[in-house]
Length: 69
Image 1 (tube, rainbow, N blue to C red):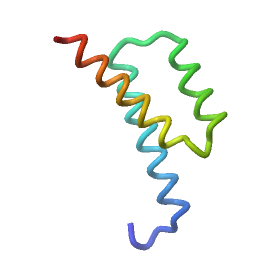
Image 2: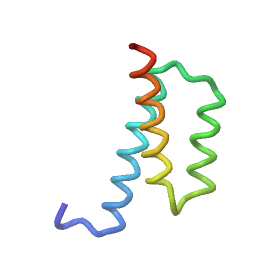
Image 3: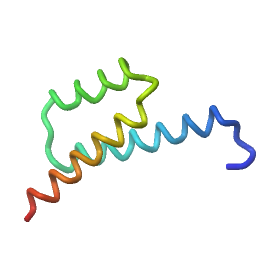
């Protein structure tokens, strides 16, 4: 990671978080509405995309954990 520029490191982080969110959404059988919310939030809040995806991941993860209890 030392040789990569800051821009490419940020892009890799965003793609990694997007992958985590896709796996989290697939694991709890979401409907099309959640996919629309996910992509709309990433388009309209590009500056806050990492924060938005982290929040969405934790909401989905906590919800799926509570559902299994």
